[in-house]
Image (cartoon, rainbow over all chains, first blue to last red; front, side, top):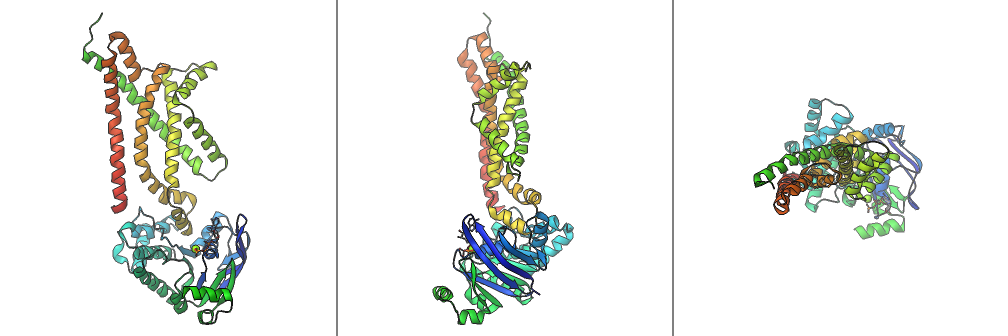
Length: 242
Length: 219
Ligand SMILES: Nc1ncnc2c1ncn2[C@@H]1O[C@H](COP(=O)(O)OP(=O)(O)OP(=O)(O)O)[C@@H](O)[C@H]1O
Ligand SMILES: [Mg+2]
């Protein structure tokens, strides 16, 4: 059974139809890379799955639960699906540890000691156990992004959505973040990630989705999609990025 | 004709300055409370709240404070309500301060990056939780310098209440001048007292701004 089911999803901003009927099913433990040109709707799709944008038509369900636009359903969904952003979006007024503790305590009502222990564990997991008391602006971009990952993991989601999480990083910091993601993938976390890191997509992902003008233009295992692009659009896209 | 020493003048002015200080405090604190309530109506999710507050702010920012004082004082008088000067002054200044403080604070809340809302949403927080734990702590820190800076405007604003007959520092200046015929000395001293009240405020606003900027960078 699929963990994430996206069925005929359409999304408009005014007259601009950005998603024109998206169908993707993601199995538990799958790592799906979403690639495509700027403006093709990749971010919008992830944001819809997390309920940051309301969809106009179609349906999205996660672990059997429908995505509905009321607070209660949204909250339930967001407890299942974490999201990591290009700009990290750490809370600048809180230490790394506090960043990871906050939502556990506020949303899940986890007692402080337990939240703190969880925060320590998660920061260890992303290799930042020693940065518990550092503020975001005392951390490098790569470290901040790893804290953001720890923060999402602390909510124990069953899937993570990653929107170009290495695009705002200096080139030498990209690999430390990707290493964490790769480890998560190895541990069986379900991931949907928009990425421009083609090598990473090829090595780690189980499937690649090529989006073009608001549609899933091609989808398949990375060997196939990268080695044998069927459509001229994908051929051109890969040609450009190679 | 009586002989007034400079000390006599100063003493009388300082006694009246207590009312300036008291009125400033009442206006600023009252305005802050009303302003906070308006802020929540303004940035809340309702329809009516934001529209009402927008109109309120435009009304109070778009008319001179003096007119507001006249309306509070004489306007209510028209309806047969006898308003003492201190009450009209207090109410008008509170409502006026509230309009400006709401607007200052709204700017601070809206300056918080959209990503902060999105990240906290994606972690499952509700609107009030986001406000309480993520947005307001950051907005508050930005709001301190302009808020303290605005308190200077409140102190200066109290001078206008002399026109409706509230005896604070400016009004006392006029009264003392009429008795002593030494306008230059009297108003010189009045100005000096205002300066002693306002300068520490504007100075601390500047210092706070610098401190909070540095704190934001390094903690
Ligand atoms: N909030 C919004 N309001 C209006 N239009 C929007 C909004 N968000 C996105 N769009 C439009 O939707 C289209 C798809 O945007 P989206 O961000 O999903 O693209 P993308 O594939 O993620 O591109 P990129 O690679 O540049 O991040 C664009 O044309 C964009 O202008
Ligand atoms: Mg994008």
